[in-house]
Length: 205
Image (tube, rainbow, N blue to C red; front, side, top):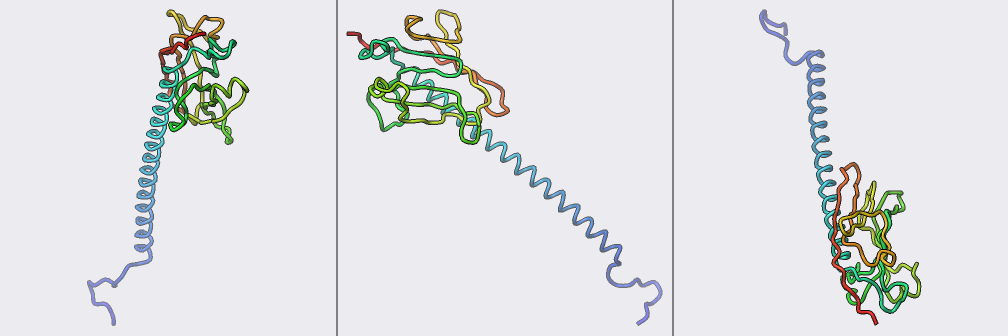
């Protein structure tokens, strides 16, 4: 049937279909990019929340363990006054075990900066019961990672208003008044924990 004057052909031309497909593709691309950005933002938010929670747990562990520090072991002459601190590690006795069910007694802790199997920086704790530490000072019974994705950690020790890079309780005549931990996770800004030490004196025989 021939078209009457003033009437147009039904359907779309090839050019119109191509323009429509191009617009649909453009809109789909915009929607995909928006969704991708939203998912990345959610992922960053979750990662930041996990890092914050990890920091709180690690800080709480450090504060509780150092606050319950013991001045030494009366059974061991060389450790009757004991606390050994360096910039990258600190060794001390505490009444706080890494595992809550393992209560009772005194534990030797070594908090140190290290790396995991993937080469990622970590802040770790090594624990030994005091009686076993006497037999084997280098032995480790429990090792636990407090913080992952650690880019830098440094310990400082303070007493009588002064700050020190190292602390030896035998040489300094006792435990420090506080320990400062300066650390950074990932790309976050460094932060500091100032942890006062409430020394529990062990009676000497």
